[in-house]
Length: 259
Ligand code: NAP
Image (cartoon, rainbow, N blue to C red; front, top):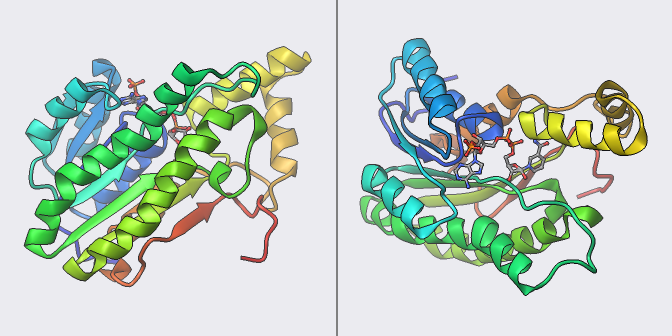
């Protein structure tokens, strides 16, 4: 399917690995030139080079922490005028609700709410002037179905979700389509790490943990970064023009709800 976005430019944040990389690859397959970002240079350059070789699109890399002001300034220097923004960053650490202090919440809000909002404010006005734009924010299933130990994530992502709900409707008339993409369990490095931690805590193996978690997913397995990226690319396509302010859940059916 031709997504109708060949020749557009996209900033995909936190995209050297995992879900961000899945989005970058799917956009590149659709013919979109990329600005890719992550903190570590090595994986970022390797992923960018693989995308150039496979899809023949232009890829600029910026190694920077997207949750800091300096990092965002470095990224925005290369990403000025992009048509598509995919917001992503690492998630806050797990913990207990009794342990989180103000500083923990401020760090989570900075990373998972205020950083994406800052990039939206920097890039969406240009999209509106040009009459076309797409924003996809990678959030989490925890927005719809809270995960207790990820309370910092639940809180910060709920804040971003509220902001996007209102803002997406304010910019839609200017041709900018803004939505959130909510991952459930996906097979990424982060998930491998979480399975390992759970295995260590319970005296089992990561494979057993994954099998156990998969039993709670009607699809019977973790999602892939390819599936996630393809959904993101569709949300950035010409065909997503009537999808405004939505929270698209990719969790294999794990969240048991009618709507
Ligand atoms: P991942 O496999 O660990 O990949 C994270 C990517 O983001 C890497 O490229 C990493 O590179 C980059 N990154 C992390 N922090 C960054 C920062 N501050 N600035 C710039 N780049 C940064 O993680 P993932 O599974 O793709 O998860 C992506 C997001 O989805 C996270 O917020 C996670 O909480 C959320 N999520 C994931 C799942 C899942 O099942 N995988 C489920 C729900 C929600 P560097 O480390 O080199 O910076």
